[in-house]
Length: 186
Image (cartoon, rainbow, N blue to C red; front, side, top):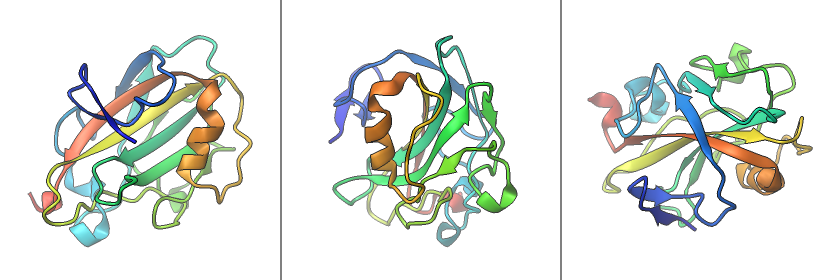
């Protein structure tokens, strides 16, 4: 269930979870509150299914690993849409390059596990909002964790990852970009 977060001014998918501090998440490809670039849309929408570059800093010193997720709470599904989820990123990794969501590119650190997205593929899938559904918000989140790794089946869903890491989250870096039908063409 999503809720409004008055400080962020939009739907806040983490409102029902234990609240933790935020740290800095930036990208050379996407910007807070701005439309996604064409390459971050899915192929059916004219994009490249390319995950954006992400960098993070200011997380707690006791961080032992990270997880990265991308979620669209505005998808007309009743449960949102998971675009990407990666667990077990070592604590010494503080950036992912553009395209890291493509398993064939080999850009994720050793030991990282990518969960299947909503299409059941273990990769990043770009934005593809249906016509008539308005502006969607794409929540790119880096979760700083108090454990070295999450023991998870690689075929588990991103929601299961969220459940398994819930007590280990120390802080989150959040970057929310937008997209709407036809956005890759603009």
